[in-house]
Image (cartoon, rainbow, N blue to C red; front, side, top):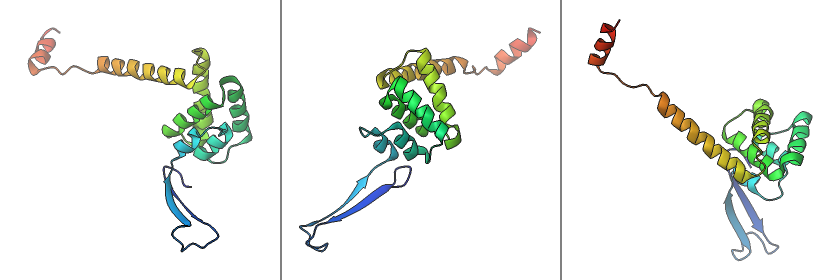
Length: 149
């Protein structure tokens, strides 16, 4: 299976032969890396490897520590959002560490809490960016301002 939503084609036949239409099942299963991670029982180490390739010993140690503290489901979720944000393999561990420091600080221990915190963050930042938008001024206002000096 390739990365970034490629298609996996699986051909299955039974013992009667592949040309027998009643016994041959050809199907295409569309999967993405995200769907693989969401499968129950996928360990954070396997999840990390699905998204980022081979993991170094230090990464494995961090994944194990985070799993003990936050649980495998939340660690898999953080791996998934790290990949969705196109963080490179080299920066993934540091990026995830910053997320877990934030979770620790804000007492976040479930995916639901993490999603709510992310929604709140996005909402706050969208409001801040709206406030920071510069007001377009007319030529008259510009002239009035220059006269005040």
